[in-house]
Image (cartoon, rainbow, N blue to C red; front, side):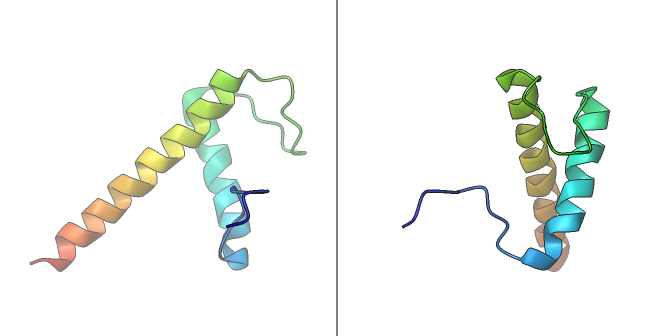
Length: 71
């Protein structure tokens, strides 16, 4: 397993949607992400909160989808 970049997007076509999602979550949390991609001025807590919230939202969406299929 190559661990040089574990944050790569597995489906390249999804990159734009993931970037929009990240900006949406950052806005919800009040984290001022830069549109040019450089966020070195942010704390690790701020960056981590965006990623963590994204994961929570994706898991919730998947759970809702799976619950809908079981009916």
